[in-house]
Every structure is written in structure tokens, then in C-alpha cells.
Image 1: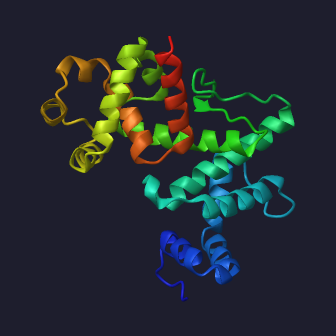
Image 2: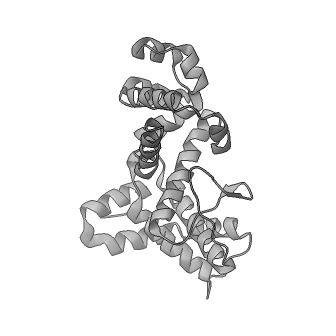
Length: 238
């Protein structure tokens, strides 16, 4: 394969259908995007990255390689946006370990440090949850709210929450409405009300939660989806 004028997404797609060329593809991606990797590390650390004997650079390169392996175009993010999240996450994990001050991320109690979510560094599972949370937040921010606002406005009563999840599932299965949401970054209220026999009050009361749940379902954020349905079972037994 010639790499001229190929996007990172093109190269990753080619890599997955030609695993025997994995080393060549990854080397090309790293070589082409080395300045991007260094710049991302500098943004996280707030300092110049030394090319020689830099632990942060080593971690950043490994994180970029990880991003190549884990990238899923179906989730709607460009590769470099996803790679930035992975590099940022792994560098912060490194700093947390160095400070011996690990903090666990949960969906019930999101801990923030300097306005950004802190990831738990101990397991790959928690790292993957953190990455899904960051991707989730990056998408819902386009709808005009953040995770803190979502936590404040999320339905507290189990019946209200379960009704909102039911409606979110119906919306997620309707490609026309989903396309409208991602095109306009808002719910087409009239269509949803007519199509699913719901009320304006229901939409208004649970709008942010419904949007956030639709994003989880349509972007295939499987770990966050597990959390939603575990929580639903817990509510149903209340």
C-alpha cells in the first residue's frame, strides 16, 4: 500500500484487512503523526517534551499504538480525536501512579481535577470506562450540556428513569430521528411525540438523560450501556 494522501482512518482500515502489514502501517502512522503525539503530551504536561530519555514520550507512543488497535469508526469520533483521548488518559494515569493518589471513576460519583475527569489507573477495564466517558461527554457537549448538568437533571424516580430509557431505546432504533439528532444536535420533539405516543412534559423533564442514553446506545458505548441496564434492574427492584 502507498500511504500518500491516505487518512489515518484509511490506513487503519487497510491494516485490519492486511494484518501482515501491521508494522509498516503503524510505523507510518507514528512517523506522520509524531508532532501530534508530542504536542498532545505537551498539552497534558504543560512542559516541553524531551525527545531523548522521556518517559512521557514513551507512554505517549504506546498510547498512540493502543489507539490504533482500539479505534472504532462506528463510534463517530475521528481517529486523531480518539488518539488524543487515549494519550491524555495514559499520561494522567502515569502521573497519578507517580503521586500514589489513584482515584476511582464511577458513574455515580465522577471525580474532577482541574475540570477534567480523573481516570483510575489500575486496570484496563477502568481505563476503557474512562475513555468511553470522555467520548460520551465530548458528544453530549454538542447538545449543550455536560456530565455535571446531566447528573443534576437525571430522573431520580425509578419509574421516570425507566420510562426515559424505554423512550431512548425507541429513538435509537429510528434512524431518521437519530440522523436528525446528530445533524441538528437536538431532539425533534414533534416527531418523537407523534411517533412514540409520548408527551412534551416527558421529553422536557428527561431531555438530557434521553439524549445521553441515545448517545450511549447509538455509539455502542458498551461499558456505559451495561451501567445503564444494571442501574435499571436496581431501580426496577426498588
